[in-house]
Amino acid sequence: MATLWNKGTSATEAVDRFTVGNDRVLDLRLARYDVQGSRAHIKMLEKIGLLSGEEWSRLDAALERIALRIDDGRFSLEPDVEDIHSQVELLLTRELGEAGKKIHSGRSRNDQVLVDIKLFLRDELRQLRDEVLTLFRTLQDLSERHKEVLLPGYTHAQVAMPSSFGLWFGAYAEALVDDMYGLEGAYRTVNRNPLGSAAGYGNSFPLDRQMTTDLLGFASPVYNSVAAQMQRGRTERAVASALGGIALTLNKFAADCCLYMCPNFGFIHFPDELTTGSSIMPHKKNPDVWEILRGKCNRILSCENEIALLCSNMPHGYHRDYQLLKDILFPALELMHECLQMTDYMLASIEVNTQILDNPLYDYLFTVEEVNRRTLAGTPFREAYRQVGKEVNEGRFRYEGGDPARLKASDLGHTHLGSLGNLCNDKIAALMDAASNW
Image 1 (cartoon, rainbow, N blue to C red):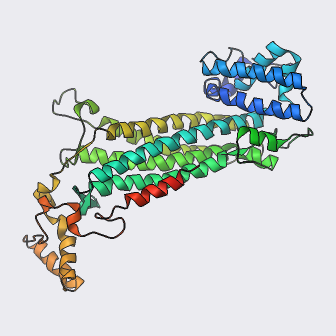
Image 2 (cartoon, rainbow, N blue to C red; image 1 turned 180 degrees about the horizontal axis):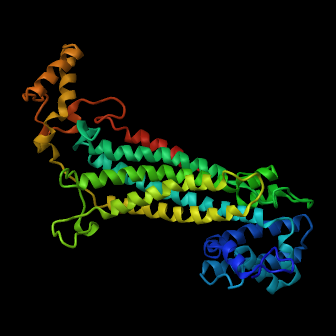
Image 3 (cartoon, rainbow, N blue to C red; image 1 turned 45 degrees about the horizontal axis):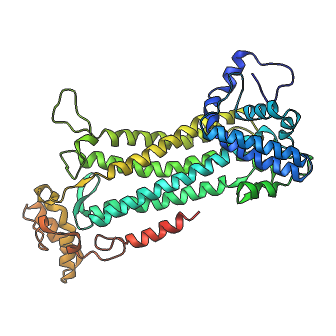
């Protein structure tokens, strides 16, 4: 197998197979970023005199041709090539001879892998940001559209107090603001340049690390070369933590949808084509999409812990264990994109039940409203509470503020920030605008 570290001896086939693992497949996602990092690196090498102007020009043109092959889907790893870095260097050496062999001057595969992963993750985080924004806007639109429709609120899985679809949809929209803060934090960790740290201890070439930082659009270098290598695992864990925040939000929303679709609740409805049936029960409309989404989000939530366990017992410096990070994080990123897109797709067809409170099951939903109504009329709170509790126990409670089946959210007099009658969706939108400005 062609390797960058070959010194004249070859590993056995069993060792190759065990140590390379799934890298050849996963590395294809890094191909364009390996070329991007290499183009910045050779420009810097030309500036400090390790490449002539003519060598740089030929190398850059060759790398651009490789980039076009990647974009066109014509790039692949040859059977005996270990990874993407080896393949790119092999192609350059075949085409340009000695000039191709110079591309690795001043860097190690350690910082090369790091910069590839950071460039890749930077794009992934930007895409996730855009997908979260799309879902956020959908939820806010649904919140405004259905803000007057009352919905039973539950605590301890018991009927509790009036809520509304405006409050429910809006709650998940605002939860995504917090999730966006997590994405931004991960982006800040990702958006620092490790290139030039080599194997973790720098080297004796007069590298211009600020130049490659600027060329690659990073916010700053990771200045300390040891600290740069210590970002292996730290970077992936920061991204996994951000994914976990979003996954927790979507997981809870999916669980709500599974519950609310149940005929015993009947709060929401989806067209038949978005549900599945039973092989023997012709009446069934199963929430399979939400169940699978809930399960996938649980898998994403496990990602950060798996990364932490993988990286927790290694001293500083590079260790081959880090290669396994891609096996953990890359599939989690795919799942996250799928879950965000599918949630938005499903919400485009959601229908809400506007007659929920016709059901006498919710007769006690307004006990707190009645206590508050009496308190506002002058009865001490504890006395009003005792009165309403006695009426409930004796089966004669009636809400005196109006017919529950005909009430709208605005009828209940909830005016404080974030309540049924004051959702603050505009303020939440402003928070999201600020949170996503990176």
